[in-house]
Image (cartoon, rainbow, N blue to C red; front, side):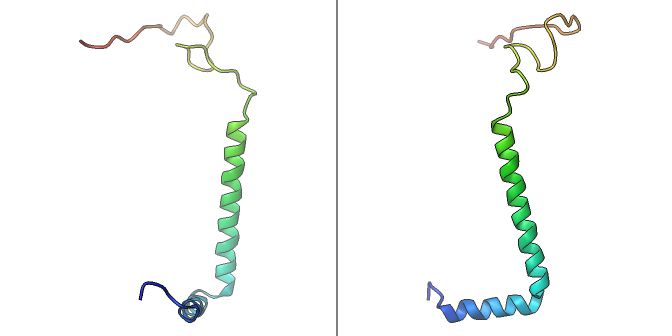
Length: 79
């Protein structure tokens, strides 16, 4: 009872094809493939991004040390 035979899966596949149609299933497959490809490209670009230098400790990226509008403070823990 726990596993389905090949006939069960073929019947389920036939019902899905009848309900959605082959054209819509093809579009869903291509959309899913494009989303996976975009995700992989995004992860790949994010991990190899070296064109922006890392910010110094205590400094926000994009701000320089000569920016006097920023106040640098240290957080202390309560005891």
